[in-house]
Image 1 (cartoon, rainbow, N blue to C red):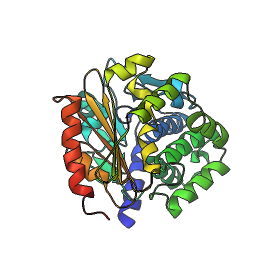
Image 2 (cartoon, rainbow, N blue to C red):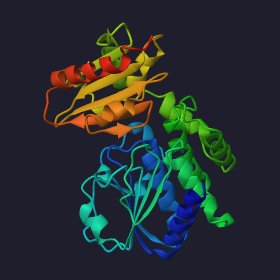
Image 3 (tube, rainbow, N blue to C red):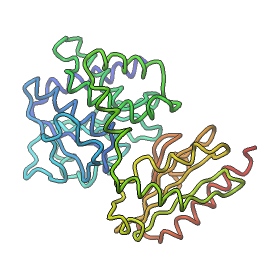
Length: 331
């Protein structure tokens, strides 16, 4: 705990010292990555700093309600790199944020904040806490580190951080829902987080296309290995049939885990330039270890990976072989 507190203190001092910031989260930003980017951007601007907030495309419709989103440069990198401080959020390695090497190398100080179990200490300053529920939890602790009332999250910042926390804990049902996560959630609500809007937009709003795609996915669901493994393959044709995109598959991979006996659920998507795979588990399977075998990663119960040199069928067959070895001895 002491080392973690020391690293937060060092990062807070670096934030106070820096004047020109570049902030980014990981590719295909989720609620945690984007929420933290927005909250930190807002705080630094309130402190009089100049901030270039970046997000790699594309941002899902379910996150477009987040306050301050207009300040984020989506898919547009700066023309010149005159930043003294670069902050990467929820990026387990330097490449997770995209092609940012030139920017990372130009910075006087590179700060890395992450909560993944497998994460590289590539920054000049690193705060990696695999026990944290989310990067949002860590960012709130960073806000607290200032010990200045002015630096406590505003209602908009609290909304962004709560979004990160609630999405990474799966609405507080995943095993990473710790006492600290609930403490931070309570504090964010007290600070004005718009919980009702978050719940309505993220969890209770689906477009016609998204619901049709969910129906197609459930029709294509396959059960294997004594019903311990559920696999869904969505091809380019499936997306074209409804005018849908791979970004509109939020929540599909978790559906099969409601079936008693399912240990691992996989959603395999054929995208224009890659095959992407989302993994979920229930009970004792650490799917981050499965994802790592394919060059990916994530959390014990929620992970993923991408493959560019194989067909969707090849990826599905290889993944099934790995999962079979993992679940075969589970009663």
